[in-house]
Amino acid sequence: MPASALAQQAELLDHHYVGLSDIQRAAGIASHFDTLLVFESYPIDREAIAAASSIDGMSVTDVGVDSATHYPLTLQVTAESTLEFTLEYLISRFTADEVETLSTRLIRVLDALVGDAAGLVGDIDILDADERARLLVESGIATTAPAPEPVGRVGARTVSRVLAEVVEADPEAPALLVEGDEIAYHELDRRSSQLARVLIAHGAGPGDVVALALPRSVDAVVAVWAIQKAGAACLFAGDLSAAEMATAGAIFGITLEPVDGPINWLVPSDPAVQAELATAPSHPVSYADRVRPLAEEHPAFVVLAADGTVRAFSQTEALEQAEQVRSEYDIDYESTTLTTAVSGRVAFLESLSAATAGALSVLPSTDDIADDLADGEVTHWFVTVNEPTDAADEDIRIVVLGSGGSGQGHCPTLYATDQDSYLVQGWQTDHSGTIEIPHLLLGFADPDTFVGATMTDTGRGTFTISGRPITDAETLDQLDLAEDETAIEVPRRERKFYGATCARRGVLGSISAS
Image 1 (tube, rainbow, N blue to C red):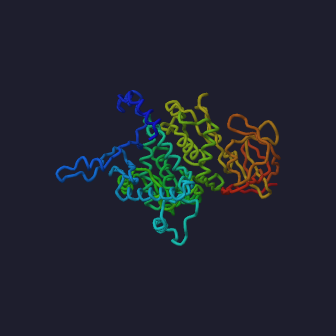
Image 2: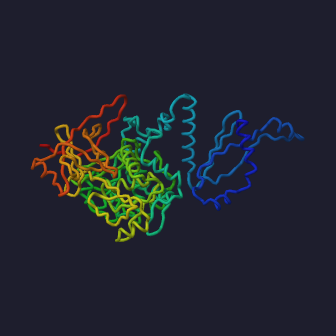
Image 3: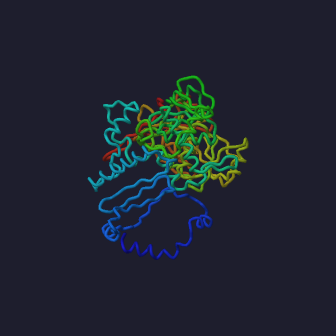
């Protein structure tokens, strides 16, 4: 350790009389320690010890250090003539095989760093050829087909990874409020890890869609997190029919009342499922647990629009949408959110925006929404278009999200036409050819395109946008406008990219413009 650092540590010795328990009593528990990094210098002069202890033919042949750990996993590094790595672990959290696997991968990473000191950590493959081949076989992927380059990349930005970062930042922070009881983030993390492993054991993983057909509840939120940890895509389906779930591509589902059909249902109250949950490990789920590698391009959420259009949001797109909502409506760890939606974009974005902000989500517990808003001290209420909001006081911000689908009462909506344009259905304004739409509606534009029209920010989470008024009766009949709605046509422009880019795909409604 540098002399300056040693000097700084020595200056702090006079303040070491306050114990951890005293600090916690004075400042509150906040976050428990789960990771420990300690540098201790214990130089051992083995030759001097051997010479000094040689008495009547007896001598000290070796010196070792024994220690114990109160942490799930502790890595000790000893530097003598060589570097020695020692992993100590709690057998209640890890098995010997798991720690052996971790140690092998650690050495592989260190070897890679020594071999290419200027290389990126994210480019290091922590799996060897045999382990990768075995995982491919076990996941059902053809043994002759190597995994795509971006899949399983160390450091990939996925919803599961961001949720883990939120838990690590403040595990004791309240994540959910139901009937006056708070559920901490670490508890949500523990329970969802167990359910994720059950989902994985049933075959759910990246590329699969899991229908969540549960009412707004703690179990539903646990299920959302579990689906993300398994790497699958979550379809909020609390009020969808089995046929609609199948249309959205669901092959797995979580519900209290399963129905016949192609969906492989998981019922949390089933004794068999309860037994699986009881024996499932609760430590964080990693790439090694999943049935196949998870990439940023895999879908994280799926939304079924009112016109039957399916919109899949990749891991990257879902996080970007949540970040936009948080930024636009000033949602952070001090916020408290609420929604009664059990399907659609509102359910998806309330869940992800609150979780990635480390905010508190209030679960409705009464028939009177005003009581839930007041008792939970809600700061942000996520609603669908035309949902009554009279119960909100002036301190509550109303987050209105467009549905992204057609049909009366589901405005605003964005349609791609066959004439390089968009039909935009929105709320009427005082000016002909100008409508009002939520900011987030623009997220439904085709990949690598944008709306080529003049827009003005209203300052209340919406834009006014101008274009050619739609007057054709046949087209208007297809749109099925409500009394306060109208539609305009605007150019669809193509984004120009320079350098490497990755096109992302989405699905929009299609209509012929006249």
